[in-house]
Image 1 (cartoon, rainbow, N blue to C red):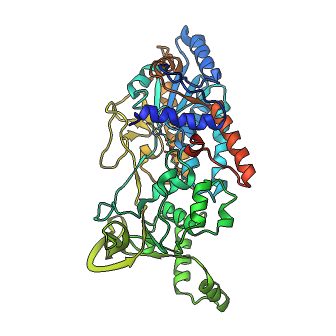
Image 2 (image 1 turned 120 degrees about the horizontal axis):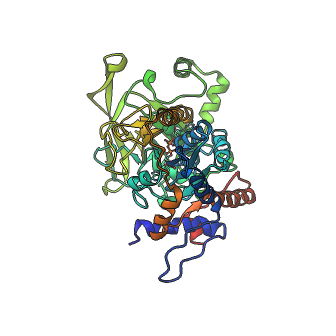
Image 3 (image 1 turned 120 degrees about the vertical axis):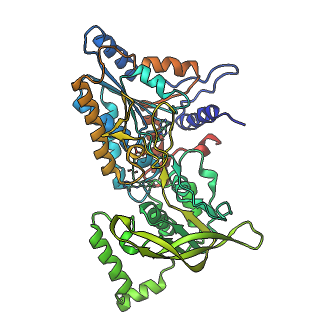
Length: 478
Ligand SMILES: Cc1cc2nc3c(=O)[nH]c(=O)nc-3n(C[C@H](O)[C@H](O)[C@H](O)COP(=O)(O)OP(=O)(O)OC[C@H]3O[C@@H](n4cnc5c(N)ncnc54)[C@H](O)[C@@H]3O)c2cc1C
């Protein structure tokens, strides 16, 4: 069995081989760190030296996670604190978190934020170090030794389970894994979801559920020019799924999804209109002729996933009919005794993401699954901050994440100004971490390394008539 570190060295190798940069370690040799970017490290050392003799040395900041929360926090600290040097550490070999691996391929405009993140990375006081899992390759305590400030922005890496009988049947997947599959998260392309049935049920009525439903039944011509992975495009083209039902435990007024830029009132009006208005003859004909369809089913909770007669596959889902009780904040959906079975061959659970602690050295709220904090300051842990989904829970869009990351950055800067962060002691920043990573044989990917991967992906996409073809493990096995 591969150790996690060996698996990740392989993963980095997959990307690096994809761009012709990888050299396999010789037998007995430590894996070689890819260091085409002395820029960040050199600047850091220079700056630390430059400031070390003064009473106010460079503010060494490290950010854990390169999703929107990490980038926006980095961007704002750099803007507000001219002495700050910011290093962003990322578990995956490539940056951008859910912007790259979550946002649906048919929403390319959302990914434009990558341009501003790239600008941040080109800032002379900012560096990216990919393929480093904080908590494994380097501990939070070691980062605290090396930096004045550590901002935890590592998102919500797990998903909530349904915890009902039948969850392990063939044909049950988390919506997260389907999203990762079509978006090319390294290591997941062999998921091969079984799309041989006609009806899919998605449990949960958030934006992710809508994304997945749309991707499953969109015309292939709409998808094929996007950055969707070619292997998933092929599978979706061959899919037999023609009906997607999106099930929620509450009513239409409580749905979690949003339709940009419509406010909730407009969304509700749209749903009521669609449900009650008799379609025109033309629209009715169009609907009748449609090869694929989707629908919302409200006030239903999953009770059991029903097996086929051999007990192996999904044959359907048993739902309880719910009623709403209470109002406002105390509104609850209550299961009644009435049950309803829906025949389907695919069940996707889209009931939410959750964060986990990556160290026992800082507090973690196991109930809310967030790091307890005040305006981004981790409680009772000076020098430690948090932003994004790990700070406020896995809800909200990129804009929400931007605002709370700015809040965190402002807390950092206020703490510098108030003197509650001690800058009289210089910190070594990346050079201290680099030494540890080298000792541990960690193979890191720098931002110029990512830019080469980016170029290779764009070139590969252009050949296929797509906006991008992501490198994935498949390349590693070529
Ligand atoms: C499927 C999906 C689709 C979405 N679509 C949209 C959309 O269309 N528009 C929109 O505005 N919002 C969308 N969102 C919401 C948006 O993606 C989030 O608001 C945002 O990504 C949260 O940012 P984050 O940085 O907290 O988390 P993430 O984006 O998850 O970033 C966290 C980063 O930390 C890294 N990391 C994790 N653990 C470690 C570790 N131990 N060490 C180092 N690095 C680590 C991860 O690899 C990741 O890169 C979507 C979300 C999902 C799940």
